[in-house]
Length: 206
Image 1 (tube, one colour):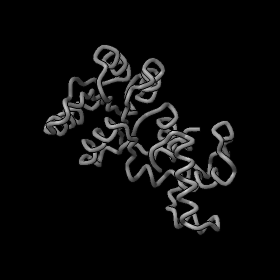
Image 2: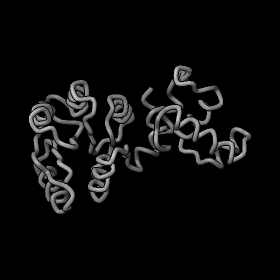
Image 3: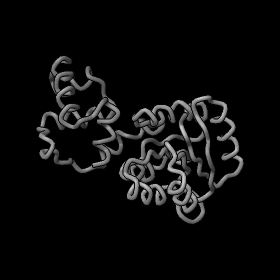
């Protein structure tokens, strides 16, 4: 059973989320709150498996609360659910260590997202993934030498984060698809990551 706390300052949305999630036999909503301050208090008291939290609330924002919680509990699993897909919010959520960022209108994706986060994955809605290439274009080129990542590997990582598939990366870098696959396997092993999504998130949070 996945124990979830919901934090949202809209009581109607909070009630709707409870109804949706409690209908799933694998999920139990153990508590709900309406502010960032409550999120911190309830997390410290109940230690849920996942904190499902809005971003913009009166007083302390969800991002501020999430940052506070993750400083004290680095293993905390926080999934942001919001009506806002602003680049600044998304980047901040990634950088503080959130496990996901979904748009509220996509209600049917919430329960599957919680299960994915519970199993160790990072989850980002389609609207968020579509914005990731713009983050790459705005970001300074990171130095990954401390991870043993070379210049060519860095190019491949950046292209993965832009959403390119192996064929597109191969064409862009004048490599074969097989070579790209081999590079990716080595990169994931060096960074101790499981898949392309984790690789993209890793790159974006540097």
